[in-house]
Length: 204
Image (cartoon, rainbow, N blue to C red; front, side):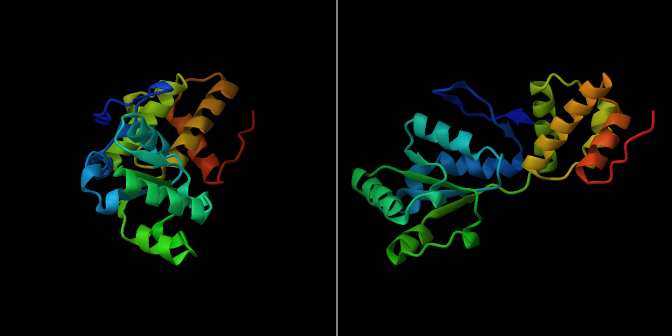
């Protein structure tokens, strides 16, 4: 079964958790080794809703270094200044971005060179263990109860995407409320069909 992250994820917003799976273990390991990053800089890249911002917030508030969320949207001269300041302060710098490395085009040559030397930490698609944990976590947040049979039907069919898992559970919650029904395999089937555009309303 999936577990909660083995880190003290207590931030200024209170205690928060990140669902863990084998695919996230190297990310956590890299964040715990900031003193070994080349030029004390790392880029944390991954898809939306994959936990990047929470991990970055924990990293910064734990005192491990500075984190810049949405780094790819900052003016390049400001980002270059942040990099220089991190070197002068001998303080690790974590840059967080939704963009894959090849999609982040940097025009400033000096900045491009420095970012090219940074450690790249990528969050990839969720593994099966993480998918199960995310489904259970998002369901619990909405007060949905998913039985073993429902989970057995849903897990092999859900898209391996952090965003899609969250949207699917949101759809399940809405259908459950609309129909005043518990979450059944039939309800899951309709939610999956709606997410893929194959949903046909049933005649009452």
